[in-house]
Length: 87
Image (tube, rainbow, N blue to C red; front, side, top):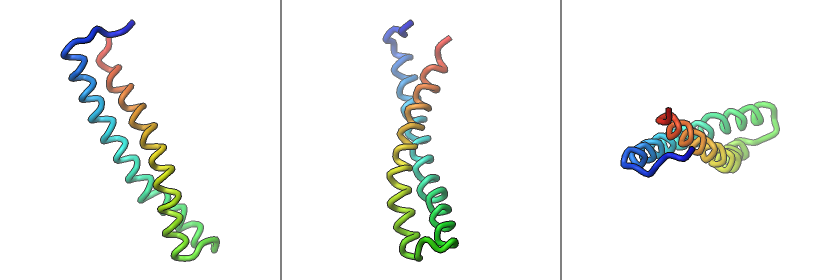
């Protein structure tokens, strides 16, 4: 069943969008600065990467994959928050 277009629906959508954007930004930051750098550090310690290679790995791996995960997180959070108002 589809919700009728009302002012409360628009407010719910705006709040859901803000929450989704915050979740996406946090996901991107955490993935780029934590996950990709930890993977690069492990690869450096094992000997697969140099210092410079580890930095570039963090950038070249972290930003694209983090962007994908942040978009998925934004969609998931938007749907969860927006549907939480339904009875």
